[in-house]
Image (tube, rainbow, N blue to C red; front, side, top):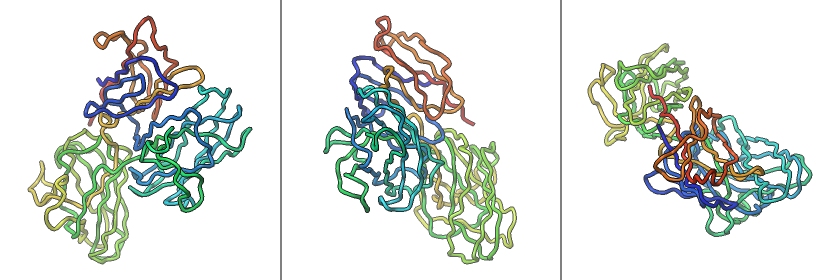
Length: 417
């Protein structure tokens, strides 16, 4: 079982948070949280918890200088309005500059019924797993498509100097990056990240296997190799992923058709995509290539010459259990989810009806909310809360029901293959 504790005290209008060491803890103003948080197939890649009492106008842009993933699945902002009513709002994402290529546009309809501070609402803009250059710059602009007022407000850091440095706000959206205004926007971005990246310079025969002794995540979304063939043509290549040994349980298997030029120095990136296959954290994962069809068996994938990446071990072949060691390192990029226990994400949300608990949820999980006046004896308040991935919201919460002041969220352990 995995637990998440919340110490309930007085909560301000703009709750803020900060990570606390190796306990995977999170401290909100008035709320202390400890423990691992689950997440959906698209994990939280960036979370800036800045909070502003009023927000800043939507004609001001913002950008992420170094995007920490390879896809963008959603962006969440905290919005408020100058006039009550319903607003249709779009969020445009561009590459590198405010006039760069459009990566995606998402819309959301938000209704405000009053103009008090309780009107602040979280708005999620969903994208279809937009491919993003890892560590590249992406720019965001907000547009009010319809509503009682031409602009809307979004929450930012209250200070111009001490905000979250992962997000930069600008005075407008004039290309290329307008004028710096502040660090920090209340923003949560979800997507997929690179779990492992190793490089190589030369080819070795496809029949040689390789494995990862300690898999660094909990899912496998894709695996990519640099490959070549000495005979030009179309090749069908399968990649089989196995647990623990070359004859272990098959976790996933995919084929890919690739057209090689026949140059041994081509180094074409070949990627196999998997449906977020669950992987045991720190378990051994083995990879086996198979040539299904092609004009030649002289097919190669890149490896280092010497002193390769120790996170991947290449073997002479694929004889069980692990064949003979050949070298450290394979030119390999693995994309998937990070360990939920190291990526604590929980938020206290103020809505018109009161305070709500919000957490990242994982498909096919259930949650139990417990409470007590101390950290020793907890009693369930609500059990069997079904996951509504990617986020669960529960509330409104009472600050002190029957004198009880502590809440704890309990989740069953994630299954592993």
